[in-house]
Length: 119
Length: 189
Image (cartoon, rainbow over all chains, first blue to last red; front, side, top):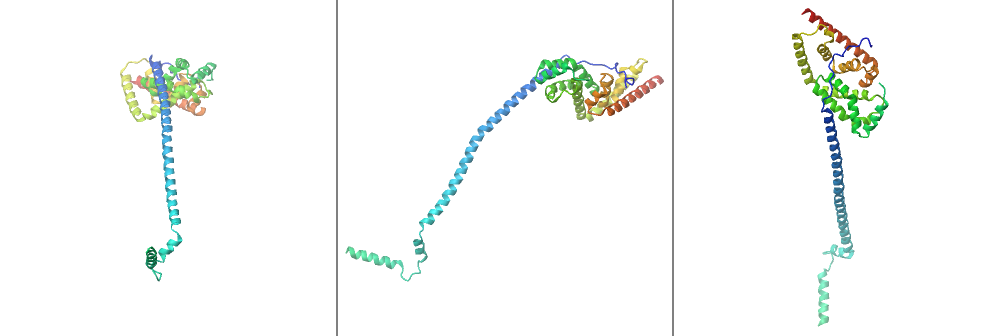
């Protein structure tokens, strides 16, 4: 292999330009600065996210509470209506017009009696 | 090429972020990196760009370097990869440029009055080298001009030694035939 070698010594050998190293240093400095600002930017975004999460969570809790309250309010009014409407009253409504003597007679009688008592 | 104790210290210091250690690496290897890039890119400005790209990359890339090969071998590998990436990116443009460049050299060469020992004429050697693919050209440069071993080349190009030997052999045959043909043509003229 060694004997087969081509003599390339005649080919031009170049050396780095005088300012190349300074350019490398400048590029490294820029990269370092960019990395730093990127890290700081990421920190800010993280901070922003954290601070945004608090009102977001509060809003969510508020909405949840509102929904729960609304739902419970609706169900409680239904319950109260059912409890208020007594069976006696509902049967009175059901029997309206079906009885032989209507309630006006009774009303009339009692009114008459009370009037007479006063007299 | 084995890992030297000095390499180990430089490597450690670069990993710690030392600019001085990087400067030492620059002093020791920048010329070799530049010449390899110049052989591959065939352009001084682009070779300088590659040299700077490689040394800007070193502080980051060194974190993944395990020190199994010599620093110089590792630097050559970075250089070859950087050159191949750049060449691939500008392949079409580059091929056109290559044709133009060869024509210009050929025309100039035909008109000039060069020495009789054409075999060692740098222009002719450059012309012959430029006919080779960039990767093979760099292999030939590292082996015959920089005296790297086939083992080192196998590491740099991530290829079996047999492949490297075969490629080198083909490249040398091509170069010899190219030079012979040119010399013959010159003598006939």
